[in-house]
Structures are given as C-alpha cells and as structure tokens.
Amino acid sequence: MNQASSPTRHIGACLSTAARVTAALVLASSGTALAQIELTDDAGKVVRLQRPAQRIVSLAPHVTELLFAAGAGEHVVGVVAYSDYPPAARELPQVGSYTQVDLEAVARLRPDLVVGWRSGNRGQHLERLQALGIPIWINEPRSLDDVARSLESLGALAGSSTVANANASAFRQRHAELRARYSEQAPVRTFYQIWNRPLMTINDEHLIADVIRLCGGQNVFGTLPQLAPTIGVEGVLAANPEAIVASGMGEARPEWLDEWKRWPALAATTADNLFFVPPDLLQRHTPRILDGAQQLCAHLETARSRRASAQPAAAGTQER
Image 1 (cartoon, rainbow, N blue to C red):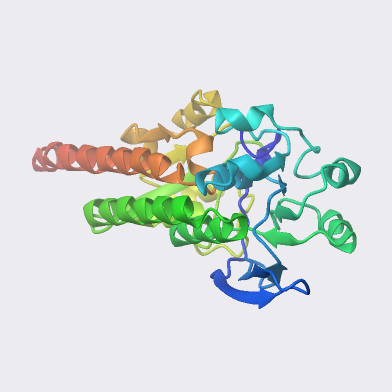
Image 2: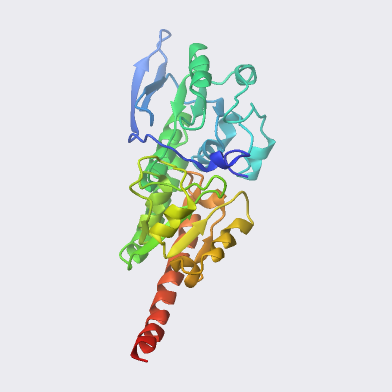
C-alpha cells in the first residue's frame, strides 16, 4: 500500500522550501553543553530542538520511510497506517491514518518530535499537536533534490547525520547518473495517470514530473494549474501522448490501463506504449523513487525504440 487506502494517497502536493540546518552549542542552566538544532521545514517554519529527537512520530508513510533511510528508525515510536517500508516499520504502534490522526494516541507516545506531511495531514490536527507543545517538522519534497535534502534534515533532527548524509550523497550520485544517461534523449510526450475514476494526472510542479523530465519525457498536462488535476478522456485524446504511464493501488498492473486500447488512434495505443510502474516506487517521496525512475526511464526508452522502428515502415507505406 501507499500513503493511504484511497486514490488521493497518490497526490504528493508539495510546497517545498529548501531545508536550512544550523547547529549551535548553548549552555544549559546546569552548565552542561547541549546541541540546539534549528531547522527550517518545507513549510518555511523554523523548528528548534534542544537536543536530537529521541522519540519521533511519523504522520505519513513516506515520512516513515525517510526517517529509516536517514538512520533514525530506532527513534521512531509511532507511525500512521500503510507505513509498511522498511518491514521494521510494520511493527510500530499506529496513530491512525495520515488523514485521521489519533491525537490522543500521539500524545501517549510522548514524542519530542512529530514529522508531518502538509498536503496529506489535516491542518487542524497539526495545529492541535503544536498547541500541546510538540515540535512539528513538515516534509514535502517537490523535486528529486528535495528528497536528498529531506534525508539530511531528518538526520540533523535525529542526530543521525552520518547515515543520513551518506545516503543523501548516494542518492545524488545515482540521480546524476540517471540524468546523464536519459535527460538529453529525444523527448517522449508522456501522460502520467494516477487513477482512472476520477481520471487524475499531475502538472509540472509535481515531484513525479521531475522524474519524467529526468527520463527525457515531456508531461502533456504540465501546464495545468492544479498540482494533481482531474481531467477528462477527451483531454487525453486531444493531448495524444506517445506514452501512458499508470500507477494504481499496488504491485499489480491495473486493469484500467488497457482501457486506452478502446482508442486505437491514440499514439500511445498505436505503439503499445501503455506502461506500469508500482506506485510505491514513484508516489512516495523517498530514496526508492529512483528505483521507480529507473523503470520509467526504461519504459520511455522502449517508446523511443518503437518510434524508430516504425519510421521506416511508415516511409515505405508513403512510397507505395
């Protein structure tokens, strides 16, 4: 499962602000030196901790995964539903879902930090937790670069920067390798389908659009104003994408992807460029998104190869 049990779990609406981390030593009243951490979250709010967080509650499945990747898994004491990666996260106490947080359950865990998801968590839930005096840090990556910065930020918050920074560096290296290999390839007009009913896609501000660009794709709905808009079949037919990439609800290719075969004149249908990437690999803002990117890039390479092989046949038809 992904962020939640409904199609809206796939919407990674983000208001990304580059994380800024500073650490300074201050003297406590006892004269003991403590590390005060100041970090600006993705909502532009400065979060201050007197010491690295030891009891962290995650309010989104992707946040849980990021915390473990940042080396802070041992400090996570509570998660929301569908926090299923890595496997160790499945054993942690749950505090409701990301849309319906059980505030009392969070309070009982006595967290010294809550990591939330602005576009997924309800604002009133975050406000009530903050009113209890619990520090809250908001995570919402908008780009692949933001994923690496998220690791670094969470590592700074949890005192696990050695692991977090190493994993962020490895992420950046792999990102650079994929960019060098694919980003300058011939553009492929691409429609990314989040869901079928309602028919949903993404614009160019979405993190997944950054993956499409990485692979040399061109998002046919990139200029729409909404981050994750609902569209109509007529709009897809008018845009005439060369490739359609779908997600769905799990590891299996969704049956509704093949519904596009009802329109044989559609470029993606004509070339059989109807592709699937598991949603956990593209729709969670975690290091695994590069696994999804690798699959998406390979699919767009397939589309390019089919385009190339079709051209001689088309030319021969015109000559006759």
